[in-house]
Amino acid sequence: MKNNFKAFYIQLGVLALVFIVSISSSSAQINPLGAQYFQNQYLANPAMAGYQSGMRLNLGYRNQWDNIPGSPKNVSVTGDYGTEKVGVGINFFKDEAGLLNRSRIQGSYAYHLPLNDDSKKLHFGISLGLQTERLNNQAIVGSANDQTAIRFNDQESILDGDFGMAYTSSNLSIMGSISNLKRQLEIEDQQSADFGTFYAAIGYKIKSTDWNIEPRVAYRGVRNFQNILDVGAEIRTASDQLGFMGMYHSNKSMSFGLSYHQKKDWQLFLLYNNPTQELKSYATGTFEIGLQLNLIKKK
Image (tube, one colour):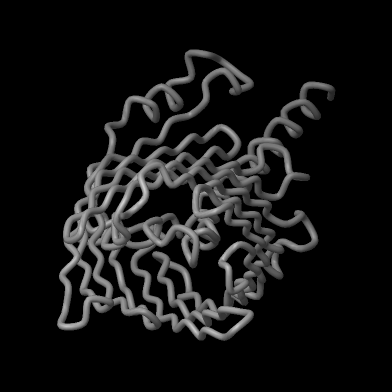
């Protein structure tokens, strides 16, 4: 009888782990880092690599659903450098959820084409890199020689890329990008919502004496999941030192952010995203922190 109960609890634990991994694998796509909307648009579109002259380093960390064991944790590091017409960048993202560790690293090249007015530009960008998925063997409760885990960790990294375009002026920005090009072209009979397919956004800056307001509307696609509409705005002081952000997402969640810009040398970004309607009974919200360092300022 004791062995039966033990087997039952083991199976229940495995099912719970599978549930956590499945929802967390798609969470990074369904709920991307909030910094991509205003603070670090390179996260969503390779065309924005080096769109501002100079060098920037962005660090991001997100902790999701802290009250669930094995809850997802995300780490992001991007660096980009831009001259008048050319931008290059590197983008690293790591997602840890339960036993599953997923990491992605990409290099990016962007070309920024000035139009008749110096403030107006067309941007084109492409990223290419590798994605790797591994199980944390040290956290597995069971045999270290489990062939399923061994075979999973023996799989090769996935080579993939993204492409993006954008138009920017002193007030208006319009952009669109296609993600995971290779995986989208492959014919797969899978129902998992495990990667993003496209991203489009439009924003317009409204400047006044005391405040600068930038409303933004974004539209995102996720494989085997309904497309998501994001509507919100960022309000910044005229000195650009302090900013407040709010976004409503059509999956019935909301994001609220606060940013502080220190003399254009560095910027600190904090964000809270409440869980979707389906997860409110099980999990707390998502907390994100980001830091941007301007290493080489534009002249």
